[in-house]
Image (tube, rainbow over all chains, first blue to last red):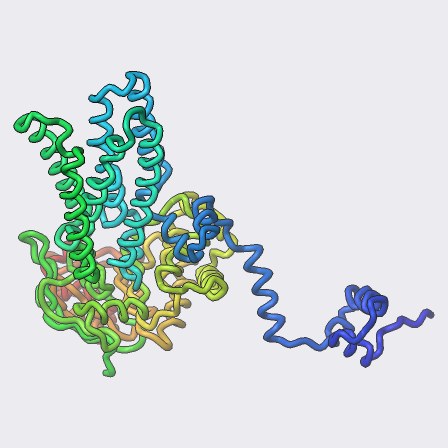
Amino acid sequence: MSAVWHPPADLVRRYATGGLDPVQVMSVEAHIARCPRCRAAVPYEEEWLGAAWERIEDVVDRPRPGPGTRLLVRAGVPEHTARLLTATPSLTRAWLVAVTAVLAFAVVAARVTAGDPDVLLAFLVVAPVLPVAGIALAYGRPVDPAYELHAATPMAGTRLFLLRAVAVLSVAFALTGAATLLLPGPLGLSAAWLLPALTLGLALLALSGRLPPLLAGSLLAAGWFAVVLVCDGTLHDRFLPFHPASQPLYGGAVLALLVLIRLRHRRLILGERR
Amino acid sequence: MNATVEIHALTKRFGRTTVLDHAGLRIGPGVTGLLGPNGAGKTTLLRCLATTLAPDGGRITALGLDPARREQRTALRRRLGYLPQDPGFYPHFTVFELLDYVAILKELTDRARRHRQVRRVLEEVELTDRARAKVRTLSGGMRQRLALAQALLADPELLVLDEPTVGLDPEQRMRFRALVSRLGEDRTVLLSTHQTEDVAALCDHVVVMAGGGVVFDGTPRGLAEVAAGKVWICDEPPAGAVLRWRTAEGRHRVVGERPAGAVPAEPAIEDGYLLLLGARAKAVA
């Protein structure tokens, strides 16, 4: 009959407290890996073990964040905020593809036609509407399939709306800005969409305290197109909304809207409970 | 009763239709069932209580908070779990991602604590093995369990469940009852349902709504007693009963006036419920 060796209690205790040399550690570990009795005898801190298991579970279970979330986290955005931002409904692949396609088409058309003023005008007219459309499609019952699910959470309302608006504005401005750099012709004119876009985007935020975002966005887009048509049809200057002389007006409007939004920042989503 | 929810003269109109007409009730800890036919105003009342819809008139106090005031509404949302009647999902999310997302919306910003909560609720609704599945691949019953799971995140003190047993098979319904019964031991649960069996099995308090108002507020036993002395068993189908149907034994159960030759029967919750709805009930063969 062969006697089975079990490490003495003192050896197990020293193993658990880290008091053994590496060779002894390997020897004890090799034994307790196949001996349930000795394994059970290793003293452990229940809380520590539970936390350790939880950390392991978390690494195994947690979903791999998407590229947008990873990018934002690398840029210093807190992980939970990054997850909220990338879940914005209008930042879907379809919206991003549509915006990129529109801008790419404008750039290609402008280059093929060697800076045709009509093509540039079309770009300048459409560019400010893209962020408005994105914000309008970012929040609200008609555009968000999970609206009812999150409308009863503490983040619902102004906080979530502003987060999503920032996400959409950032992406829309980045894409449109990149397209601007690729357009032929003077950069000053190509970038003349910037302040109108900012004005319209902020006007949408301010109006959302009175109207649902989708309706507010539609009205603003319609108003913007009407202004362009009036400038062309009545004032006979198609580029009037983009003249350098017009830019201070947008600048003033942007400042006024920022003040208004600051004052009304707690009531930006009137329609949230309608 | 120590009320955790008080609703007083609640009114809501959609266009010209009055959906809630001065509805009022008081709910204490435990499980309360909200019964009523389609269009009775149950969902509208629950949405007002869950703070996703603003009433046109009346007052709600839940957990001592007034959702009409913005700060108190946010405070109430921190202590509330809501399962809507038609919970929409982002279909491209996995089950874990969706719950993680809702947990963030419930201000669980610490990732370890959040994921612990997600795993706990997945276990509660027995969806752990589907954690990595895309929401679009789930069956109707699984989606319903996912909707329930998100309502349980952050340990809410008040649970508002709008038709939570829709789409669940009998076994899942039993498990759901066990879960809700356990939850009702230390918090307030208000659930709407069409199933009188759910009320009988789960609820210590029942409210019946019809036409935008509350027509009964009491115990399940009290609801059954509404039909005391008005439930009969007879061999021939009588004319003029509020409701009658043929039983498995080939006899006729009648709710209403006593038909000739009928013997009295023990009233059940659904008898009281059907009698309360009175004119709305139709004779079924």
